[in-house]
Length: 192
Image 1 (cartoon, rainbow, N blue to C red):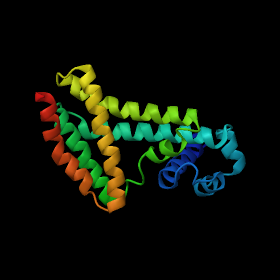
Image 2: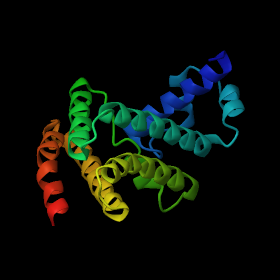
Image 3: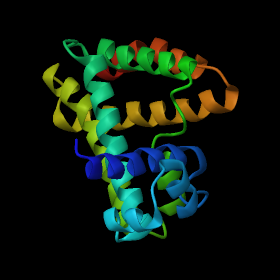
């Protein structure tokens, strides 16, 4: 990676972390510039569209990072139940290590969805990609496309909710409970 690309990536990585911790409205450009170790001129060189352009780049960065984590955790696991459980167990480890900073892009989505359509669409694209990974596991296991989409949405909503609960309760217990309950929920759906 060239120095220019590295500087842009440093800004994106810093912004992604800060947006997860404090939300879009809670982080100013000066804070991002200072923490990323760049200048205001360099910032606008890389992101002439300002904070909105940076937020979209940060969401795309987070989307790719989480997609990779899901794919790594579920690689070689054909059973969707076991794949989801593997991902949840990895998330528990992340929580205990302190690497789940916030609600991925949930904080940004929640505060900007009604007022900023470009950011909303970037958040939607990220959530859609994450749901697709699970949906493909369900389809490969023989479930219909519609059922797979619905189940992946349900699973993802549970995961996002569990992250909020983990942060609120200061415990990975909500993720562990979901991991334990997934077989019962999906078995009923499969047999229902």
